[in-house]
Image (cartoon, rainbow, N blue to C red; front, side, top):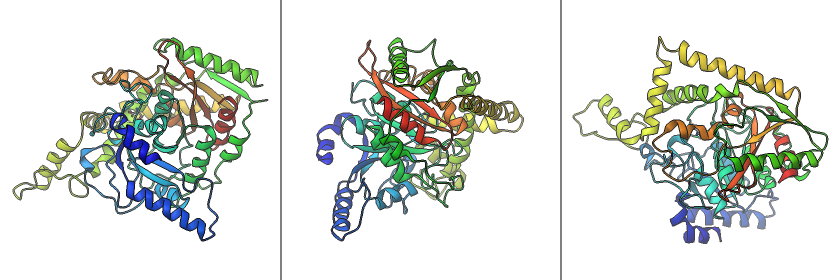
Length: 451
Ligand code: GLN
């Protein structure tokens, strides 16, 4: 049914870069077989899913939204891919994304943008716009995204779906193409909090193949999602996340959610996290710095595209021609920014300062969580903006992640879930819930209570 739905609507939505019809039908048949053989399968066995095209899939193309990996067929599965298959989840295909997960609108995909199913002339968020759009257009009931600065939560917010960035180290990064390794985190996308929890449980947990994977039990997210409640919880409203640049209807729906939480028995307090105002600037030094290093591996020798290899050119020339042709403008901007920020003479002024801000952001969270169980804010300052509106203005584009980025810098966990439609444009608004590291279950407990 989902494959038929994709056939009917994806020409317009463009959620997928690759639909693996044969593979999906084979996986579904394999689940039937395992069941018939008496194997006890988990709750997601046979449930279809859309996978962000940043996770390697053995034998199935993985482009990361980039020309530089066009035609590359990975010889191995990411740990997330492997765990999905082991759980019997049926992978329908690979979803569209901003190139190398750099963006907030999916317009940086080398293969054309994705439309927001609520209004196809608007952005579906990014970088995981394809995953979010697949859910909102009912092409898949579950999806996987990655969140370096907001790429799971911001698309969830603007498409009226649920997205979770787990605690850093909670979900393996093995086989997840690296953008900014100290910030990148894979996570579940769904249409309900419980669905997200069921998926979270499948993909999370220690992986010896990822040196930053946390070796501790996965927080009880499914149990929490089944027992939503906020009675007796102290919830902090982040004071810095409102004011100039925030759409009135977003703040209105957010304030209503605060009242709902109060009525459900939560104690609401205002919390100040002054360093959050520097987080965006710090992120745009740290993420490009790590990206400039990570993307050095695309040298035209190892993967995908190779340009100008006609026998008369040096390896350096071929590398240079390939990177010039294979990377899009945003990726190039970040490689240059990052290389500059890391260069000797500038390192302390830029990268060093950004790392100090990162510590201050973590301290703000620590102070806040000494007093409250979770923090809340709008997920994004505005609803989905029109396609094309911010493509010529990187800073305006970067501001879409104002409320989500501090969480990545500190490495803790956060969820975005729908909290109504903005009255002025009828588009979805996201409520962000933030929890301390390894307290991901709190997101689901609170999320299920207000959903
Ligand atoms: N929009 C942010 C960026 O462009 C975050 C991207 C992400 O989370 N992958 O870097």
